[in-house]
Image (cartoon, rainbow, N blue to C red; front, side):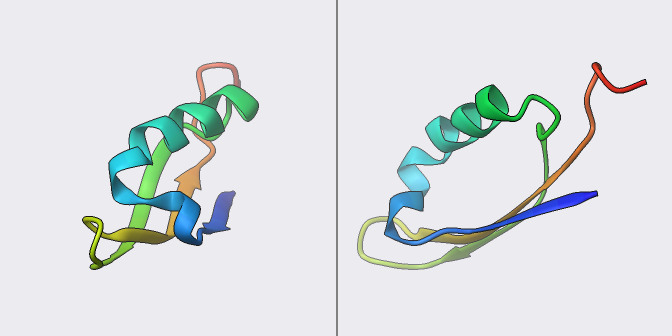
Amino acid sequence: MVYKQSLGISGKYKNIRYFLSQISTQMPGLNVVSRMVITPGQDGGVVTEIELDTYSAQKV
């Protein structure tokens, strides 16, 4: 299963590590980034779309 998240201005590139840590905290199964779309912008780019694969050590 792939989790698709469309991001707006809140997904700025410089905060992507924080965003990913928040996702992995809230949904521990979603911890592998399979695809990320970054739109170039003034502030270093905006992450407009991200896909996370549900790979997890908790899954058997």
